[in-house]
Image (tube, rainbow, N blue to C red; front, side):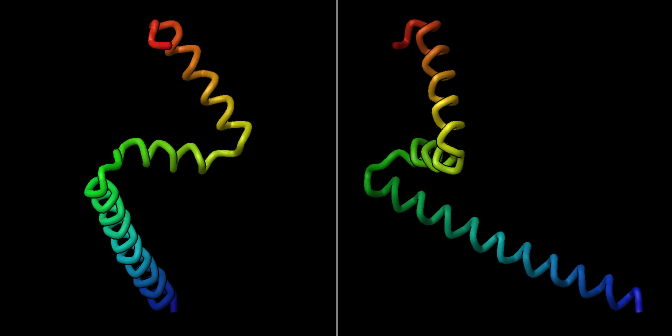
Length: 75
C-alpha cells in the first residue's frame, strides 16, 4: 500500500515537472518573439518581476534603485 502511494506521488511530480518544462519553453518562445519584434527581453523580465510584487514593494524597490543610481551619479 505504501509503495503504491509513493509511486503515485512520484508519477504526479513527474507530470508536473513535464508541465513546468513545457511552460518554460512557452515563456522562452514569447521572449524570442518579443526580441524579434525589437523589444528587450531582459527589460520585459524585469517588468514582470516588478509587477509580481505588491504596490508598496514596487515603490520601495524603485526608491532603493533611485538612491543607488544617484549615489553612482547615474541620475
